[in-house]
Length: 423
Ligand SMILES: Nc1ncnc2c1ncn2[C@@H]1O[C@H](COP(=O)(O)OP(=O)(O)O)[C@@H](O)[C@H]1O
Ligand SMILES: [Mg+2]
Image 1 (spheres, rainbow, N blue to C red):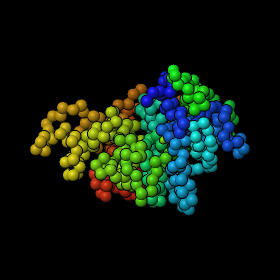
Image 2: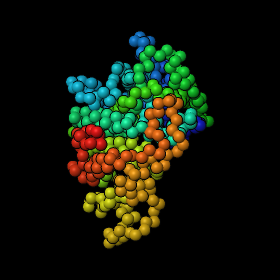
Image 3: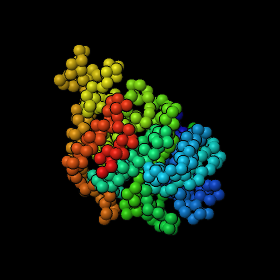
Image 4: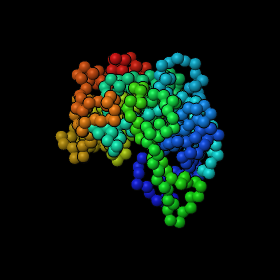
C-alpha cells in the first residue's frame, strides 16, 4: 500500500499511517474535548490509540485521555471491560492496580466516531523506563531496584488475580501496559507541568507526493512527554490497556489478540488456545523481565520458532504431541530423535540455559552507572546480582509457572501465595 505521509525521523510516536478514516483522531495541543478537557501534552500511543495529558477546566484536575481509533470504537472492548470491573463490589487489593475509568465520552471527528477514556495520569510504562534513550537517563542497569521490583511484581500478580477471579483475562500483559503511578500532580500549575514533563516537541506531518489526506491528518505529531524526575513517582504500578481483554468463557483465538510472541504460552502455538493458564505463563515472563531487565525469551525476527527454540533450550523437549508436530525440532535432534551434539543454527540468548543460569546472569551485563535525574534512584545499582536466597525462590516460582501442561502450571491464585511473590 502506498504511503500517505513522508516518513518521520522520530520513532517514539504513533504510526503516522494510522491517520486515515477509521484510524487515529488528529489531536492538536490546546484542543478541547467534551467542552472541558484541554490538551496540554502527549503521554503515549499504542496500536489502537493515542493518550494525552489534559487539564479538566471544570474539575480543575489533570487526566489522561485515551482516544481510541475509530475502527476500534464499535467493539469498545476496553470501555466495556472497565465498566464491568467498576460495577463489581469488592475490596480486593488487586483493583487498586487496575486502571479505573473516571469518565468517558464519544465524539465524531474527520476519521469517524471515537471513544475517549478519561483516566488517572500515570508515569512511564516499565517498557519505557527500561528503554529510555538519550536525556542522560538510565544509562545503565535498566531495571527497578530489587525492593521496588518486588512491590511491582506482587501488585501485578494481585491485579491479574482480581481479573481472573472475575473470569476476565487481560489478553495483553506486556511491560508497555504496566505503568508506574505518579504522586498527585493536581496541585501543579500548567507551567509546572510543562517544566517537569518538558515542553511538547512536535514534528510536522507532510503528505506524500500525490496524496491528499485532508483533515484526516493532524498538522503535526507530538512526541511523548519526557520522563519526569523519579521523585515524582510512587513505587506502585498500574495495569492499563484492556483493549484485548476477554471473558474466560469465550476466549478468542490467540492470533486474534495482539500478544507479542515472546510472552505467548506454548499451547497458544500448538493448540491455538488462550486461557487463564496461558495468561499465567505470560505473567511469569513479564515478572521475570521486571526483575531481570531483559526478556526471558527474545524474538528478533518476530517468529514463533525462535521463541519455541528458546523454550526448548531452557526446558528441554516439548510435550510429546507438540514435539512431533514441531518442524523446528530438527535443530535439536536427528531423524531418530537423538540429541544433536552441535547445532548449526545461530544460538539465541537463552543458549541452552536452564533457568538458574538465566537468573545467575542478571546484573552481569550492566552498562554505565545508573543515573535517574534524582538523588534517590529507583533503579538497581550497577552489577547487582540476585541474592542466592531470592534466586532459588525465583527459580522455583518460574519453574512452577512455566510448566508445559497448562493444567500443571501455577495458577495466578497460587502465584500470589508463592514465597517469591508473597515474600
Ligand atoms: N493513564 C496514563 N498515564 C500515562 N501514560 C499513559 C496512560 N495511559 C496510557 N499511557 C501511555 O500510552 C501508551 C499506550 O496506552 P495503551 O492504553 O496501552 O494504548 P493501546 O491500547 O493503544 O496500546 C502506554 O504504553 C503509556 O506509555
Ligand atoms: Mg498498550
